Length: 433
Image 1 (cartoon, one colour):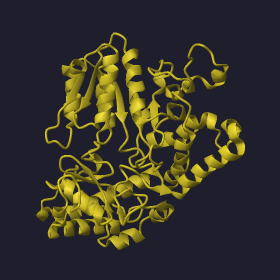
Image 2 (image 1 turned 120 degrees about the vertical axis):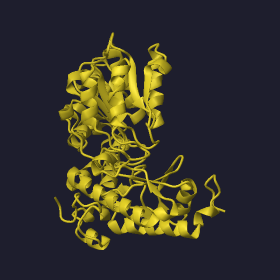
Image 3 (image 1 turned 30 degrees about the vertical axis):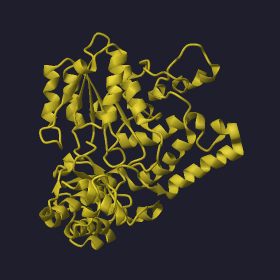
């Protein structure tokens, strides 16, 4: 355990002064490698800022385009022809997978389409039911319902939705039990709920799915890069994620996917030439021969300029170490939760994120009836946070560039906005008067 990060303490470490925490922070040097916008940028779970390494890798790709032209597909420093696979190699350790099981490709929603569709087809006579939860990010349901419809299945009959008891979290027992009650062939859950930040137990859910003959897939958008994973060890069947949040690869950056090696050889539901086996791809055969790896789920030509920043971003994550990133993340969120409890509860703020460290991801949901107007008032002060309906201010103290003093300053700014009623100058549509 690194100095200053003691997860056995409710405030995250053994030092009361946030300046001392920052002085003892083994990751403090990484902040200088980011251009952090705003006075306080606490929205990295929506879009991470640019780093020096991401900028360099993008510039390198531009120079290779300029100097090598089409030859860059084979002669670039990281040849573009295998860009998706080679970046997948770098990502594999973050999700606990073998390199052949990971590839960067497509967008998150496209990856949900192709993987869910693939495994609906592969199940054959198995039940087409898919188990999700009502607190999922909506695009996951859009894609799944679409894939069910395309196969002649009524989503209202075959999409089984686990309900929340409190509007914030999902009880894992409620995920496991419906597997007995419904004909479920696939369980598809987020690793972290996008609104509340609840972290689900991937191993438990996967085991329960497999015990009942179902497959287990996960959306890791809010955990990859801030929470370590062991997908292969846990036997997860497939997973998807984006790279513009904690991986800081930029807006519209290429997404990633994982497919367990047990499923290599399945025909992708959305087949495209970039998923063809590399050895014969340019023979341009009439019939599709999928790669014998996760690379088979690539569709179109890799968008090099949307993938290049990820190359540099992963360099920083490797240097920092995912375990140290997780330790600091828990320390920061624990500190934030404690300060909200101590100083903001009197103004009607409540923490909607699970208190147990093992049950939360990298952000904290602060609930308030006027959350929309408060969020906009904070932005007017240069404090960048995120609002999620109906009443959540999402606050993300991303470990690579957020300091403990930033967390303290955020709470002070929020407290002042509440005490002075500054948010009352914002109309319900978010416009400042």
